[in-house]
Image (cartoon, one colour):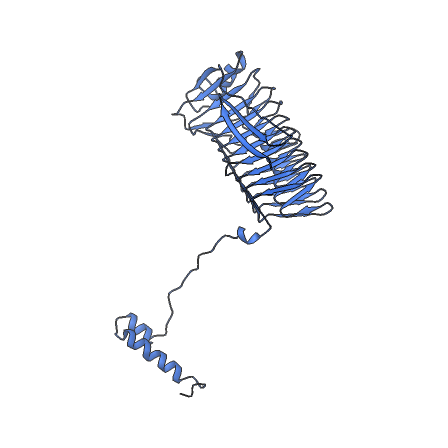
Length: 381
């Protein structure tokens, strides 16, 4: 079967599908000859703020790198940070937390330029106007999006089309990120990771505990036409997707090839009233290729379409290389630790006497057992 390779060279991240007549190279923006702009405080606006740095990037030509300094631990904004730059923008941080403070989105590129985000945590996006497309982080104007070493958690994003991560037709590259405990509500398409037509690549990442509700297609990872490659010990688990159209508990690819390599899709739930449903993976029109992967414990249901708890492929085929595919939901049960209560004994019992230091020990236990046996009416010895 085909193999998937991911390489990073000179600021470009690339995923190559080799050994097949179909080859994709997905490149994302890197820090080539970029102007550097510093963020020195966590204010919403004013000199040294992230918003001010974005304004500077918009006013200059050529790519820009915005560096959030290490001493900036928290940034709180009162409205979305919308970037309308003519050229690519890279934002780097050393673990700073961006609190969206209930804004309908956090960081979005509204022009057609590329956006890269590295080392940042984003939280507290609040529901927005469903007449607009919204995202925690995205390129709504059609640029490529690259995320590295990021955490996106505790967000509630709503829109016409909506995603925690959202691109409107170009590539999404996610490397070393955690996307967890977010809620997405969309009149149209919705996903924790949503691409309206471009390829999605994800490596060394975890997407878990997200809830997606969509009036169109919905999935934890949703591609409306481009291929989806998940690799390098990534995990998509414990997510719930509900849609009126097609739905994938883990992945829904509407036409593009799906590749899952050295990764797992576990314990997701997909349900729809009007489309097809794949608990682990849904592929509408192309192949699913598995290598050293696990798809298990997922559940799917559809009122009117086809469904499969593990993998549903319409118009393609599944190839399995050393992978596990099943629907054993017992793997999703949280182990419980048995609790023990101290024994309750009647006053004056031999157990109480022994515990109180009244002697007896092994002899007392043997005597108690002998008494119980001899009191048994069925004992004839």
